[in-house]
Length: 125
Length: 113
Length: 222
Image 1 (cartoon, rainbow over the protein chains, first blue to last red):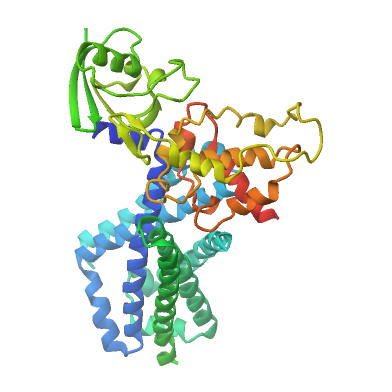
Image 2 (tube, rainbow over the protein chains, first blue to last red):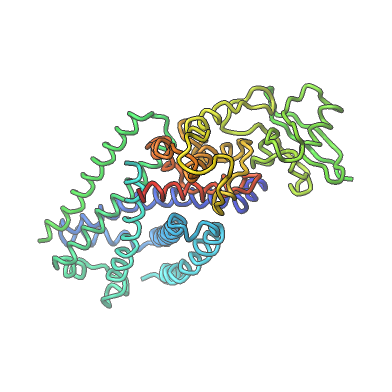
């Protein structure tokens, strides 16, 4: 176990980034499906839509929203990192780009979004 | 041919970042109601009846589908043992899924008009 | 005096060997001690013992490395796991066959072909290529590659690196043929997902992901 952690935080951080990219990508595809489903309810009139949206007030959905925010941030920032690497600008510093750019900067942006969301879910709407 | 998929992912990815920020801004920060989180039918309908927004939203959906399903194709090709013919079949299948998904998404706009 | 536990994945299963740690002991030293003092049936390969030949490549604490260059003290653990290199067929215990590795190697036509220009005996100066010439064909990059783990057809980092060196050599005349192999949809450079595992583990510190990226760019440019 300790070996695995050392491996993925050490020489194999690029592999960790790749796997995170794929996992968040799949999660976002699932989200896209659910999102289109909800928006489709728009076409069925205001009652159907409001019913659909009322589901999203509960704390469970708020947590899922926070998770979605995390997934989007990770996937987008890592995507920027990959593009930088592909054009040659990030080749020599890919590991730093991951830990500082994706994880570090990602955590900052995540907290600015997640904390208000979390507070509003606790306070209720 | 493989280079085309590679290019596509990067270009759609960059476009998605822009579209996502625009979409998120418009949905969560523009009107007072939306800022409070009241996603009401009328608030959203008002925006969506504008054809410019329809085009942007549909473009967003299509680009997201290309990026997402192309990524899914990569995952299928890397982790399955279906061979080259199986890979071509998977590509066609994902294209069909994408087409159906896109059509389904566009329907929401059609009924509003 | 530390006592180590060396867990070796052998053909018959995982075997544990207790061993006293001595100063500057390498994994290869440990294997020799086990073979001479505890179990003479333990099979492993080595040759030069100094990191030049690439023969002793193994999966040590879940990272492919050269056994002769891996000091036990740097592993920072009293349990050392040793397994045969992944992505290659096992012959016996820690001995693997490099046949698939060299099959891919040969596909890019590693020998210099024809003489497009210049003196064959003089290696033209090239700051980029000169950092990539040190390959000892140890197979460690091949073993580390996440794509190689599931794709038997993929060329692998070492073969692509060799092809790169040939393509950028003005003395060579077969660049076009090699680029066709490299551009192949299922086995070529496009299967690389820039995981950087190969660059991280290369004992000669060749930045293989950089090489593959450069080949991608040459293909796009042409």
